[in-house]
Length: 284
Image (cartoon, rainbow, N blue to C red):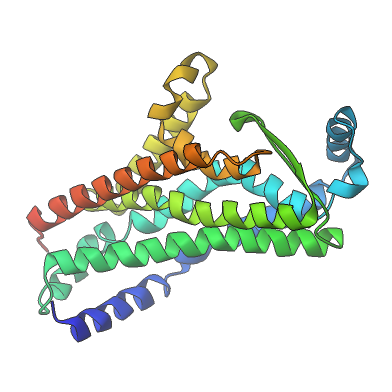
């Protein structure tokens, strides 16, 4: 491998990805969602539900209405459904769009192998995924802090994962940081899945739709009560392992187990995608 040439090409791939407007759609949408959440959580009806939940557990709403709670609330109820869309939109384009536009043939005329091209695409896709998930956590925290005048204590209620936790500001911030970092790792599997579909003989839109179909069907099946015994077999179950950082006692074994499963899936998707890409006949 020609390392200087690889580094130059990798930089070009990063510039190419982050020059596209659609790359930033996820960032913009999550920022809008967070601003809407700040407004909604200040309205009487949502506040009534939160007050009732806290009162029934012996807590005062004034202590848990700050930025930490708002940021965690936004993440719990939006990440699973919204992140997949924008990760699939970006990673599903990485190779399929280049082939459709005919630019892939130009790239392959340079002294770089198909394996190197795939690795570069996977790296920029992974970087976008990590940046988006970190943005979701950090921006949620900043918007919540600005909208509610401080961080406050942390209240997390995630009914699908069976999580209810209340924490002091210091511990809450630490748990929130761990959960955000975990999200940046877990959702690499979604990016890898979309990249794999992008390597097939599919149009970019089809690769995106296929990725979303897999994610949403899996999510629906994961929420069916009668299939609770099959949860470890669903991708959504492992993708939500970051929520477990908000358990009163962090279940490290369960979290590490899910991360290992996701690592295996991510590597499998990438190897399959590499195989599809290196054997594909690319025509104009």
